Every structure is written in C-alpha cells, then in structure tokens.
Image (cartoon, rainbow, N blue to C red):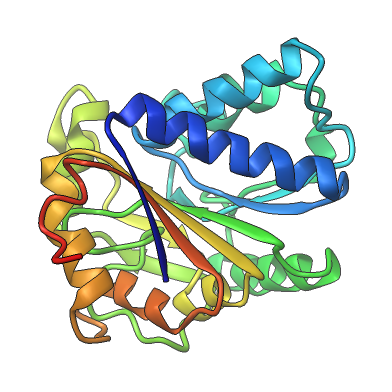
Length: 243
C-alpha cells in the first residue's frame, strides 16, 4: 500500500486528478470505478478543467459507480446519478451510455445487482477504482461487518453513515436507510485502486485501514491485500499514521 501525503486538500485533489488523467491518456477506453461524496468534488473539478483546456478526452471512457441510494430517482438532487452528472458527466465529453450506476429504483434489486456485476465483467473489469472512506472505515456503502467476499448488493446504512450524510439533506429523516453498493470483492478486483481522504475526521479511519489488522470491522483494511493501492491524503487525514 503506497501513501502520498500533501500539505492541503487542494494539492491532494489536484494530484489525484493528475493520476487519473495520466491513466486516461495512456488507455483512452479505460474502465473507471467512481465514487461520490464531498471528497471527490475537487478532483472532478480538476478533471473538468483539464478537459475544457483540451488536455483530456473522455469520449471512450467507461465508468461504473460504487453505489446509489435505494428509493431515490436519478433526477433527485441527492441521488448519485444526479451528483455524477452535475460534477463530471455533464461537463466532459463522456458518452452517457458508457456511464453506469446501480439503479436504486429497480423493482427487483437483487436481479439488478447481479446484472451490475455482469456488466462490469462484460466491460473487461475495472482498471482504476476511486474510493473515499467513511469515518467508520466504510468504502462505498460497505459498512463495518461487510465480508471480504461480498458483491454488489443491497445494504443497510449505519446510524453513523446516516448522520454523516444528513448534511446533504434538509433533515436526517430524509436520508435513505438502504443503498446498493459494490461489494468488497468487487472493489478488490480492480487492477488499481486510489483512495482519497482529507480532514482530521478521517484520520483514525485511515490509520486503522493502513496500519491496523485486516478485519470486516474496518472494511477499508481489506485494501491492504490489494497489490496496487495508493492512498492520496492531506496532512490532516494522515496525522494519526505512524509512518
């Protein structure tokens, strides 16, 4: 596991964006796994800037997002489809048919999850997966207790995650209690993984993931088993690491 630590979150975001840009340039039809939340916003803005300056072409890129809330339609302003459109997809020349997210409105969620796994395999697997990390060590919506062999599935969100995500909603009661998420095994099959984190509130989760024992209690700790995983951190997020 490689660690790259930067003085500020802006520097961290710019460096992560440059890493993704180089991978896109070297493989224009790359399959990306993407994440949502507050942390990737600056990184996506950097990728948009590169595209608008003529430095980055998304026309052949294929994407699969980690997760989506159950019960939110794609046009709901807190759905992850809406987030991706607003922060990246609508601002670059990616083909919408090449962008994939779990369907939280599916009538048969289990069948949709199985189909999502098959779609990733048909695309040749994920080349580069982007992750954030929750304060409890979750990646995607793989909450503590998620097994290492888990696949795309419906998950119950923990009270901590509901509370953390309530900042995006008018009230905590509006936060969905369930989501669809890629599983740990799905994430670990990506050829490369980049995890980005900033802020003091992520420091303990980062330290437990990097230096603690591998355990379902800290889902991100399973990343220690991956052959090519890089953490991009600002100094606050790295502050509890011993190295």
